[in-house]
Image (cartoon, rainbow, N blue to C red; front, side, top):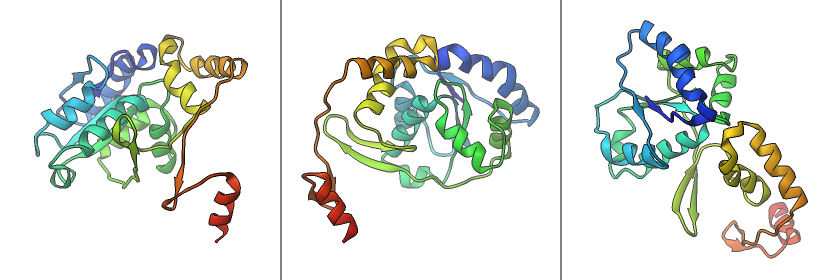
Length: 208
């Protein structure tokens, strides 16, 4: 179990101790808990500290941020082609944003709650998941599991981290601030291997 004790304004630890842990222990699962201590700590653990066959499952009790670290740590392992056949990933909500857990529970026909997510982990059934591979200018290669956002949406998601303590309201407040204090986001877009100058060129290429 990888757990961010500060995730979701502190609800991750509560979800784990009072709801998820009792259910998984009842299912006779042997559990090792690792608390993350800093940004990208989970990424370091998954990339450098786990051995093939050491664990059957890696479970994140967190929001989407810690899951992002886990996936990028695993995908950057030199032995990932072999390692991926030895381990399954599981997710239990414990953050401000729980998009991936919500998607998995909906796909499985379950309600969005900690107990249902824990039950899916206990069952151990696998499903495949698509990833987006991004070559970023400053951060190198990044793997995304939900969506890729830019400009205002990404601004609200990333920069509102400084007011994470207020919970889900951080996105709304940051969005209002960005509407009042508008800014420009400059960038270029490559589509189908060539430079797209404007939306008309994009529409023509799509229609063709």
